Length: 574
Image 1 (cartoon, rainbow, N blue to C red):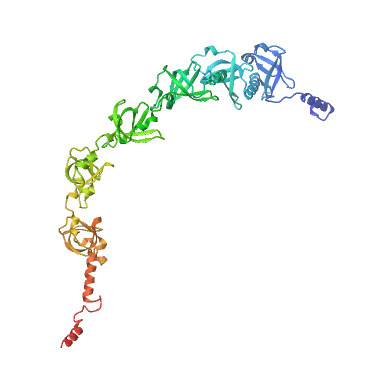
Image 2: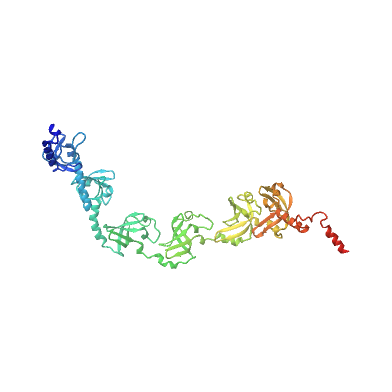
């Protein structure tokens, strides 16, 4: 005890010198992989000697056996381990053989990944989404996704289990220590060389005879060429006609000739066409004329119309707006059937966009033109109310399947148009006058009040500032409602037009039924605008009195105010 307590003694210094010289030769660092020599074996444990450690680390026999190192469990054998702790809380050395193996194996995987080299492994078990592959050299475990097992779907992979084979490293996660491999890439790399030779045989313009339909997709059809190459025919290259899916024109196993239209030597892809083997029907579109009737076959019906063929491959669009003269939301589905032949008129030919627009309704009689011929503008007719909304009536003329529009403002000349509209219901008869016909816009406007005498005619011989007699028919806070004599129309006099004196401008002065004189303040017959005023009449009468009796407040309106002038006039007469 004395020798260790007195560190300044020669013996202590000598011991320190020897200890330092010994430890400096051995690099003992936690986290490093070091080799340990087996110096003792029991039933459950293996003891290792590692120079530089104060005690012998211990390994579990089962750990070594699970790693496939049974043969190395012998005295004197060397086993690499990971030094996890030089001393734990119990004073023991902690090492791991499995972790050392994984670290060494990871280094080899990283090296192979960086050099893009394949590795040898074997599929040991299945798991969710794929399989587990064991690296033969190091025993490291890697993940093989199901999509990377083969270049073709495999229902059974039992023949691949535990068989040494090559894999390509496609992903490494250094942080998590995970590796992902692919068997498909190894297979494809061999096939790529063979496929490159096959693709090199084809050039644009070549004709492939008897290619067989192998499968469909939403964007085209795949053909097998001589069992050695699969080529794609895009949807647009199947036919000059409109095709929404390959199964509309082809069947699995069907054989067809193809024309090569593209060759990609990098992607090893060959694109082909069927329609380019035949003549383009749009080349002789000049044989068709605008505004002429042709027969067309309905090929496809959609929500917005139908696609029709004038001839095989020459597709036209029949829009829903061109289906009917009278139905605003006409449905092609309700009107036509697939393969039905109908008459159409060509409305538009766009050669640049390769588009032809046709119309079905133009082949039918235009009921609006028929209406115009039978009932020209100014015609008076007893029509039937067939529909109604909050602001108008829709009326129908006999033997014509179209409706005319009758706005509530055209029901009456009076101001209560809404009340007048409420009087009508479906099936009622109403006398109307045709006011406007727009056959191109499919519009017909009629009026009921135009069949009656216009109350505004009362003002035809009237002018501004003229006085008329009216009857009070109602009052409100904003003014009074009056009706001129011999006129069936009511007019509103604003509160500000009732009197000159603001105190007298009270609508409550009248209760209804009173007669009074008013002046016409404004008259615009073309705009059907009439403004009446009591205030204006008072101003006119006041002005007239002032002109007749002198200026206001001059005293001339007093008794005997003109006596001196009368006496002087009498003297002059003598």
